Length: 134
Image (cartoon, rainbow, N blue to C red; front, side):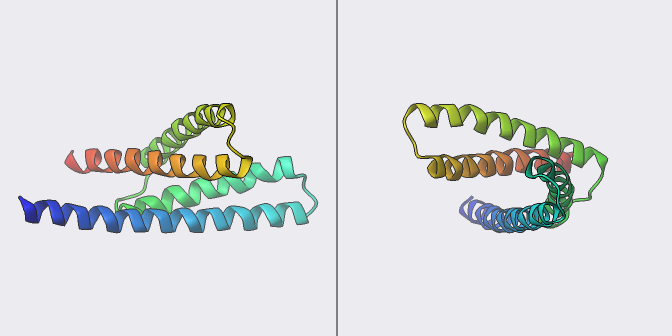
């Protein structure tokens, strides 16, 4: 039982490291794309859209293939997008709580980043484990 627990912990840690790595690369890609679109003369409010769309596609593919080592397809993409919507709504609600308790803006940004990443990782892990059992 102890060996099983330590084996599962090792797999979980490696998966978490891969997940965080993909997330960091995705954020860097987003910032680079945003900078490119704004430097081409597009407004910041517009630049968010193509940058975000490209990163959603990039992150969903990389999380499937690298973070969780599963096949990528339309079903995974749809599930990924739904999970990200749940994360966005959750962090939006948490942001109101953080404002109410008087957190500083940058602290709210980091707190919601951590919450979003944690929720996303847990839901994606659950989804992947469920799909592998089928």
